Length: 112
Image (cartoon, rainbow, N blue to C red):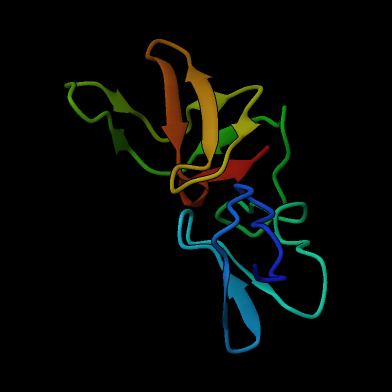
């Protein structure tokens, strides 16, 4: 058996070396060989102005956003309270008044 560490993100045992880092073929996570993986703990999400966002913040939408699969539009200036940060392309999970639960990209909001 190999002495390679398991993936810190998905615990897969099928990791392999690639240059100076380890790679997980199951979740495509990469981390440095020379130390523990701190990337998952220190992921920071910033708004359009570069301000650090955290769970529970209130943000304002800075651009009209069409709601996919609907004729609804989230208008500029809409305040969204109590956001929750999640991983992925759309990194904000929230409830928008008059529309409901949605995911937003942090590049289209600014912190209050």
